[in-house]
Length: 141
Length: 409
Image (tube, rainbow over all chains, first blue to last red; front, side):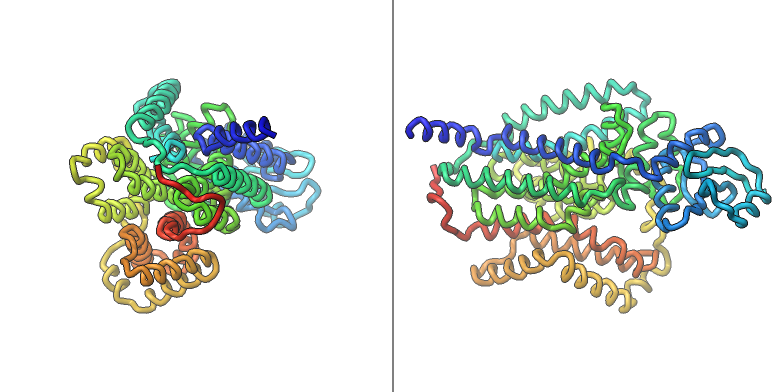
């Protein structure tokens, strides 16, 4: 009994909100939160996929270039904004009033007359595709 | 100031110093190793300096039961916030983190891209200060992790430090009150969403809170003024409105900050943030709210409909997102009346900050409806932890029975 009491006293002494105990608690919390974040978002999103596919555009667009994302992916209203802002770090910037260069994302199987018309009136600077989307960087003529 | 509290206040100053030194090193074109070494040296020496010149020995001893309770409460609270963060965390943060902080960070990650930062589309707010952006850029380069874990972990750590600072500052004064303030914040999903969404309002709230804690402690050690001044300097380095908060804070604490030769400590503490901010502001484009002022300013001030809009949103926010704060403030004023004492000077300072925000909204050159709607809930977040701390400090005079009685040595 006495040994238990002494053990508890020792534990409490070290745990008296000493700086290192608080640090340890905070460090553990941040580590667990960061790890759980990586677990929660382990699956690549469409944004990740697009970012990967767009790496080649670096050759055509200098840092700070303005780029408009015109997304035609069905059933994803948030997607254009989501992708554009997520991608901005990839040397591409935001929708502007100068809508001269457009990135088109279209489902690989889609038949879209609007896209076809847009392509017909533009020059295709670059294109890429993966198993889900087709990516076209076009310059409006 | 207690050592463990000082340790916590020291933590947000580290990224503050790192972001300033890193930004200045980019301007001068120094290799990355230079800011890294400076940050390590700052971390080591400032930690030791604080221990020697600011920390004071504990004057209040706690019983074993109280120690066990305080330790258990902190642990449980940290577990709760860690657990909740998993469910609340958005992948890329919210709007501000995509379009401003993380985006600007990308420009600062590569010295070659830095010069493009100020040529951005005005919608991207290149005039916004760089505490978060430069910290993220610095940490990404340091760790080699160019991913979203870095800003998330930084945002998480900052939002964790806010309730922990309040708790550690108060648990020796009154454990139940400290625990109440602690749990009110960590169970507030609105607060957690803003913190995990990587808004800069939460770091500003942390700096503001820590400055109030330091001012309270400055009576014991004048060295705390230096820490307070560094924190005040960081207000403006986090967000532009931090400059207004800094001015109000200084105004209301002018005697504590400058009296009795303490101005030397103040100047020493604020020097680096002030110099960095001035250099940044000289280079950055003009702020849209200030440059948008003109002949219509007077008209805007006399337009009663604008006052009605601001009041409507203010009451809406207090009634929907800040209910504990609203109740706390009512209780605080009742407490003041019962005690026949005036509200503390710093509570009045915080109320003045709210008035300051309202004036900014009244003078906004943008649509006032849009401006108030998109930002008032967040700017009040900058003040909420400080309100909670100062109110809890006053309520800590109340005594509850929890374990053995506290004894002053």
